Image (cartoon, rainbow, N blue to C red; front, top):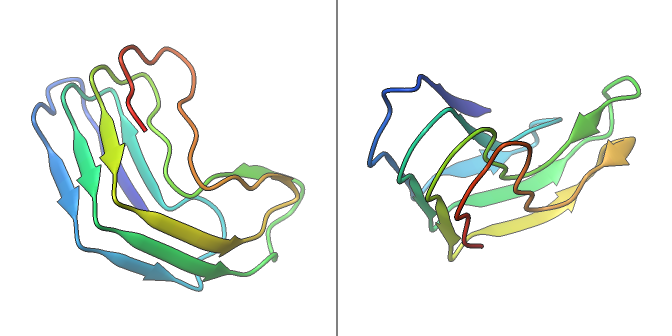
Length: 95
């Protein structure tokens, strides 16, 4: 899992990563501005977590995030389990 967490993260790029067989969340920028997430692959995530939510790529409390040219498949979780999610307190997210 990749978590970017700091209100001062600006113009961050997350690119060309493979996240394989990792349960739960994949790429989660938190408190960022103008983050670009592209050409990443998250695949074959096992369903071994307790009753919890999880998403492949999802910004949290971020502004101006662009998520493009990514692939998420085989993502398993008891709740949510979607590939992409723009979550709480995000503005101007483009997926």
